[in-house]
Length: 106
Image (cartoon, rainbow, N blue to C red; front, side, top):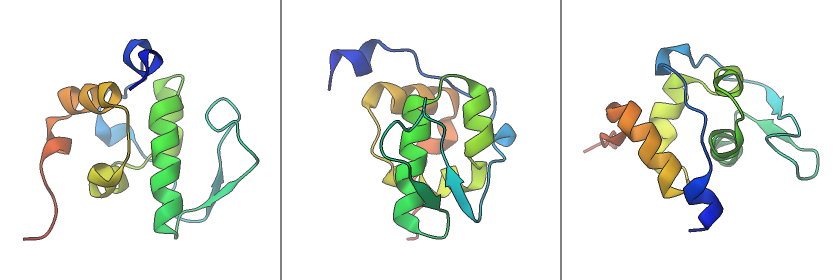
């Protein structure tokens, strides 16, 4: 893990309930979140959803970014699949312990 990932502040929402971002269609993230080549994330494509959620959680500059692009139900279902720096994962799980509960089918 990089020193940057350890030291940087990460935006967190006040509650998961306020995350009411899109669940269908396509999304283009703003440059301050996704500075690579212009890309439209297809929310029907599982890989696109995972990558988009990783980028938003890592790069959001404020809770407003999280509220605009993340959906609480989608986040809960995909949480374990997200590849996140350990400091950001730990911060989210401290604030929202329900994310650390394994939701995979038995």
